[in-house]
Image 1 (cartoon, helix red, strand yellow):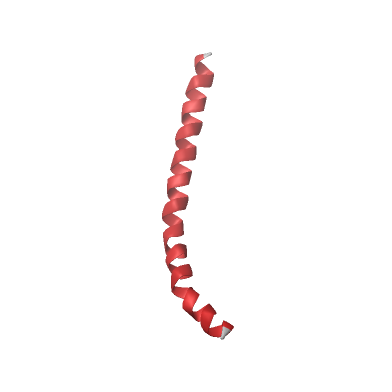
Image 2 (cartoon, rainbow, N blue to C red):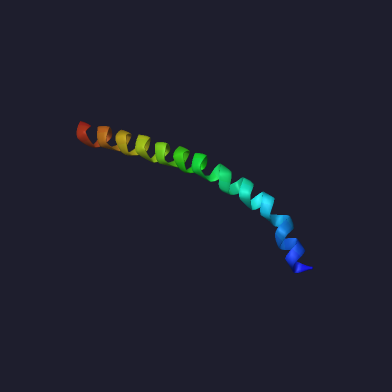
Length: 45
């Protein structure tokens, strides 16, 4: 029974994993932008 449940969950996990790279890219871009803005603010002083 539990073995079948595991198989049933696989498609969802695979889907989430497929989305992961895009999320990571978005987070990385956001962090880069924040760091650039912080450097600008810092150099202003």
